[in-house]
Amino acid sequence: MPLAKRGRLGIGLVILSVLTVGLCSTLLSLSGKRPGVTWSNFKRVKVGMTEAEVEAILGEKGFPFDTPAFGGTAWYKECGWFVLYFDGDSKVREKVWWYERDPTTFEKGKRWLGL
Image (cartoon, rainbow, N blue to C red; front, side, top):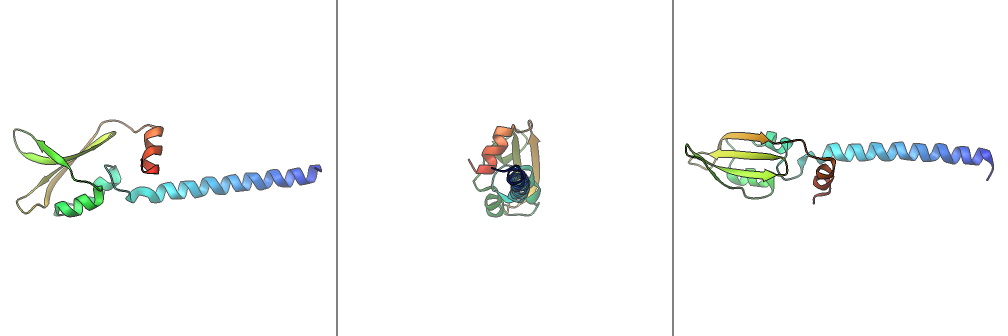
């Protein structure tokens, strides 16, 4: 293969790589509305939402989280907890986020793939 053709091929591969990385970055940034226990979903949960609305955002039912002072509903995933407290009408009256640690690159990859 002549040198000029190899040079064009190399430039083409570099451009293709840059475009691929850009596309992947864009897809990762748009994936913030996936169900599950994430900081972005925690911010989407608002005081006054019904339990059904919260479950639609999180994609699953929580489990009872009882303390001596009051009870709530909790969700847990890899590195964080949601605890939501509902009023008598089953609407969010308070929300708490416990962040245990930064997710590993492997956990981020699993979450992005939906595993």
